[in-house]
Every structure is written in C-alpha cells, then in structure tokens.
Length: 157
Image (cartoon, rainbow, N blue to C red; front, top):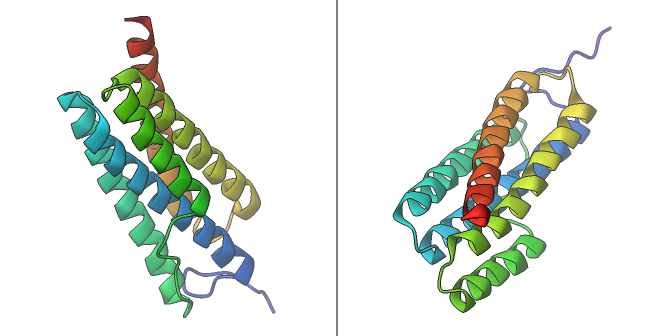
C-alpha cells in the first residue's frame, strides 16, 4: 500500500516545514509593514506595503493547508524577527528614515526568508505542496532581488 501524500493528508514533517514558512512570512509581513512606516520615500513605502500584503497572503495560504490537515497553524512570527524589527525602527529613527539603511535591513530579512524556502524545498521536494512552495519561492526570490537591487541603487547614490 502506497503512502501517497495529498494536500489534505500531509506528513507531520511537512506540516512542521509549513509552520516554519508561516513564521517567516509573518516575520516578513511585519518587517515590511514596519519598514514602510519608517522609510522616508513614497515609492519604497508603497513597495514595502505591497510586499507585506503579498507575504500576508502567502502565510494565509500556508495556514489554510495546515488547517486542512487538522492542525493549528502558526499565527505569530519569531522572537528573533521582533528584535530585528525593533532594530529597523531604531536605525530608521537614528538615520531619519534613510532608504539605504532600511533597505539594508530589509535585504537581510529577505535573505533569511529566501534561505528558509530553499531549505524547505530541498527537504520536501516532490510532495503534494511542491507546486505551492515553488510558486511562493519564485515570489520571494523576486521580492528579494528587488530589495537587493534597490539597496545597491541607493548605496551608489
């Protein structure tokens, strides 16, 4: 008898990986939302708000998959990320909302979520959620690259 994993019959290890990605997406949402308030640049503020909304949607999608497996999904970010957001807030205030400084911190957060997706994709490749995770990873990578490129643009100006 095959133990084929479906989206509503996920292995516990897969659910744990989803919970990890939920935390990262919540952290990313909170980080972008906070950065949007701190940054003194309308275009970047809009980008951060857009990325925050995207990450919120991605977290909700993963939470739905956890719920469909009769588990309680994560609904809070990590303590480490809360400390990072405080640091963004402090640096933003000390640097009067300097876009370069906030973009540097945002890029650090983007490195973390991108790495988390890469690790999870490597570990759950071929599972029932592979299509969801690959699509979300592509979105994370696009966001990461935008933030990195903008950081480099502000660094050189």
